[in-house]
Image (cartoon, rainbow, N blue to C red; front, side, top):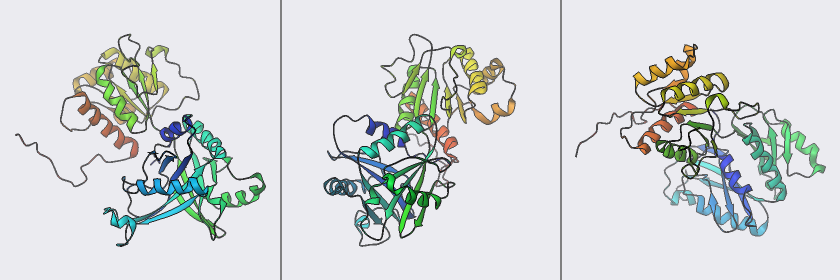
Amino acid sequence: MANKHSHYALLEHYLSDVSGCEWALATVVNKEGSSYRSPGSIMMVNSLGQSFGLVSGGCLEADIVRRAKQVFYSANATYAEYDLREEDSFAAELGIGCKGKIGVLIQRLTEKHRVVLDVLYATLKAGGSCYLLQEFEAPMTSSGLNEIILLDSHGEQLASTVDQGKDQDQAEIIKGAEYIDQHQTFYAGDSRYSLSRIDAAFNFWIFGGGADAEPLASMASQLGWRVTVVDHRTAYARASAFKSAETIVKTRPEELDCAEGRPPIDGAMLMTHNLKLDAQWLAFLHKHSNPIYVGLLGPVERRERVLELCDVSDLDWLDNHVNGPVGLDLGGELPESIALSILAQCHAVLFGGSGEILNKRSYIRVKK
């Protein structure tokens, strides 16, 4: 399963900041037992005390902001462990339900860090994956705790904040890592390192820019997905209605540019409310993109009609990728309810979830 921690959206916010604030990066680098967020999760804090992103369920963030202020003052990174298993610990005093231990590295971001994170952002925008290497434990106070090394998906260095004179040390550290798991910790000498895989955000395309697509775009954007809305019709897909969408494309199926280098479409929703258009876009997706998930609005009869019109002979692809009627049975008929139903199903498919009720209960609607 991909490690989707919304790095793309957080980095976009940080890199677009022109306020002159200082920034700190908080990263979950170590974990034992259960925790709300997994290693690789990040949170960003500025010198105004504003925070973006979460490394817990909202319980530890205030303390991390406090520690970030100390990092700004001292210019030294710090590593904090929150042990929720100890009854007299800070985390336990908050009444947190998770029974695990997490380690959070808080680093002050400099211009060198900005350059590295800009490379990371560009890689993610192009649909690529990277590894972030960070030292979080050292035998004594070490300036290395504030360094970050960015590696490509094969372990080759892309960018680093480490001075060139330490290239040999970097090479030895990188050699000790394995580029398979989403996250791992390892020792190099007396220091301990975190290696986190960072994957590109999901690309979610909505074909059809009607009013019922607006909450779908908004919710998908809140998940950290990159949202594109496509509709050639003049009265549809207005920028004023789809402010959360990253891109709005005004084009017909036969005119859409399929240039190489465009990030793949991971999830797609067909909701033009037009049989012919839905069929044309479905044929386009099969030929040019092959997304993991395709949702098709409407009942079974409408699905069969769209499949007839799309003229796609690959029946296995249609069976395995096209979901119509779309969504999970959540009840409700408002656009927001339908959007929630669609995204719940799409999220389960993209993340490899079952979509089942976790406590295995069946729910019966109680009439008031």
